[in-house]
Image 1 (cartoon, rainbow, N blue to C red):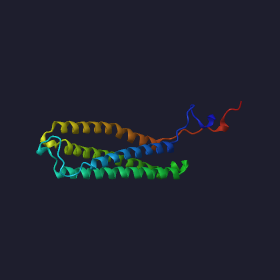
Image 2: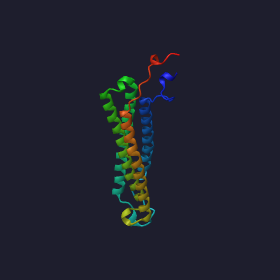
Image 3: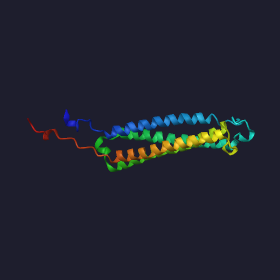
Image 4: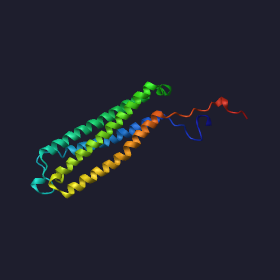
Length: 194
């Protein structure tokens, strides 16, 4: 039984790691896509802000930017999820020895990076659209609404913190998974006989 294990641990299956990471990426994209549709519900014309001052009410340009950013965000999450699903199919088709071929590795790396970058760009545009939702509901930043400044500032700070953790971690994990070389399994015939 110890023939397929090293150091008492189960050997790492790189295909399984890729599949779990892709599942997580698709799940996160699905949650963000729900947020996109929630944001679109605030793009109706003639809404009054909570500031209760006419100069703080958002003009049609803010609502149009909200829709534009939401559509770009949705498209990025859709691209990321479809590429991730395509990569999962790719991982299920090829055997482990084919999995290590350089041209398949290059294609896999491109798809992994494309999926991650599309998800990151989607988060950026989702953040921009949420800033427009804040301006529609609370009041425009240009009218000096303290609450709008606090909400947008908090949103920007938290999104930047999240991205500063997510982006390096994701790219390092992708790079590590592409350069991972599993330890060769010991040959059962080489074992000393008692």
